[in-house]
Length: 276
Image (cartoon, rainbow, N blue to C red; front, side):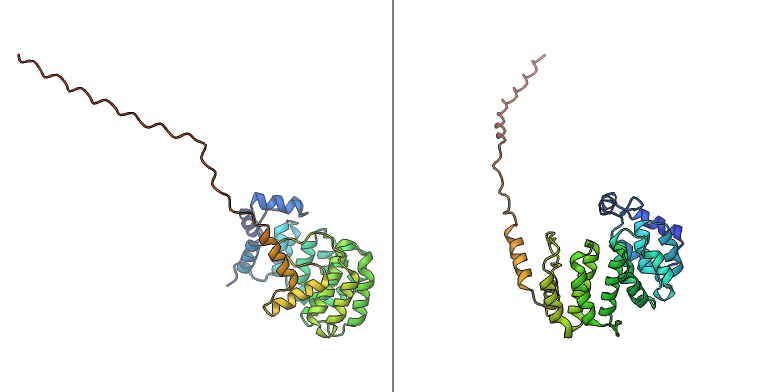
């Protein structure tokens, strides 16, 4: 049974679950100062206790607190969102993570999704444009983009990605990869476009993560589906193995051995009492 909680109770629970070190990391990543430092796993656990609650989700979103908004993304009802309400949630955002959570958890299933895809992809705001492409990708993965002109969409991705702002590039590339993964008839075309676009993301690949280069990303996911590893993944794991430091040898002790304790001289036997 879902647990009935008020906004105040939820906020107290989130604050109690905060960690100062996690908070520092979130602030550094752009979450702002209104943040407790709650790990995502704990936010998900609380969402499981509360269950879907659209009204509470809106109340939590209105607090502006980072974790409260992440939790709200897990409580909101997609069917209850109007286009205007969805725009009011997304368009003022400055953090890509919150945009992606709202899109992936709520808006993909919303009846107003198609209208939002068109509005945001054709707009000029960076994060809403990202949202539009990510939302389209989610609809493709869920089999909900039935009337999509895939050829025109791929042509548009190839045309727009080179000159787009970085956060929009991520959204365009994400959609390209999702087309390659979920629309098998267009997979070769998606891979070819990815090859022509090249490695636009020059950042180093974090350990354990997949390359954002579309052909490698598609190959990695397809290999994973088959229980295999790509050559790129094998090379990455081999390189990581070579970098492992050799086990440290024990250094010889520099402390001088304690001197052997001198044998104590036997106590003198007490003189016998003289006879009285």
